[in-house]
Figure: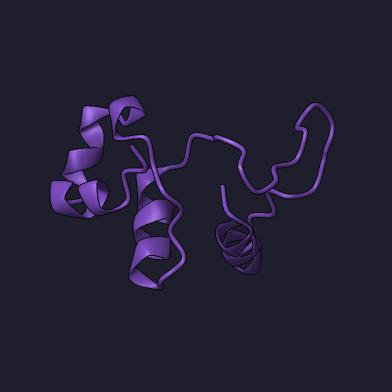
Length: 75
């Protein structure tokens, strides 16, 4: 996670920073599973966090081109 992405997704109505119930709230540096459509939207608007391509499900390739995923792979 990055602060930039967390602020971006909050502006879209999905506040991942705030603790609610058993959800701990996320902060910069945390690892979290994201849906491919939100990640792609963030990428297109310049706010996508880096990913761990080894932990990314192959079904993601139905939504996002491998070259885009490789550009954001942090390893």
